[in-house]
Image 1 (cartoon, rainbow, N blue to C red):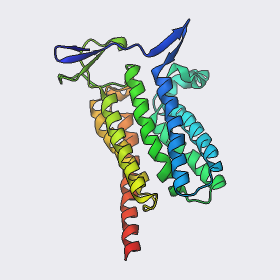
Image 2: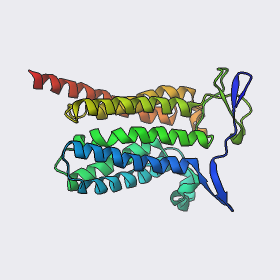
Image 3: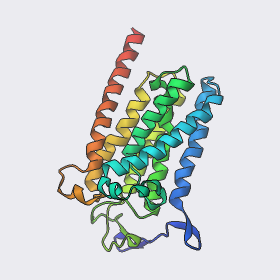
Image 4: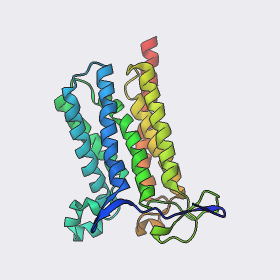
Length: 268
């Protein structure tokens, strides 16, 4: 709700609770990303006459790649010391701690393994299609972060600043979850437009490259408005999220340049 020139955010993260157990909005949104993604990729397969029996294998690879990569990414990049002394906590996903950069690395490995054994298409072909629903899933995950009152920004005086009551905040902060969700949604729309317009006949690597720019280049700049997630980032010029976003961004630029160059060669 609005009070003066800021928004008081005091939403319960649980949809309902039974004893000590509660079903969170985050869990529903996270799972919805996989379900919606399955139907999007099914559309791609039907459009390009790809056997649908490969869809279940692709989905399983993406689910495992996402979960394993997201968790290990957080363990390695953000809290290695804690998990070194508490290794069983790695398995306790319900305690929180997932990394979007880890998710990306996990998906890259999982999709490579899928491509090797399950399809005659190239690795880039698979990536170009898989990242489209991933962009939408990123929107849902950041919305879940908002519902959890987590991963928010630094103090602000803008009229849309949020006071995250359940996180113990008393001053308005940038709702960086919303900023990221909006950028990711625009990225998803752009990628879907390219696919529908070309019916999948676009230069290899183009969609994947645009995805990397849309997700990680924008993430780099939004991080300047975001509150650091862990203590060791306080004395860093760039935080961990920005450092990890840089190589993904450069790969995205390279892929777009090469895709456009190959397109011109094909026309000539």
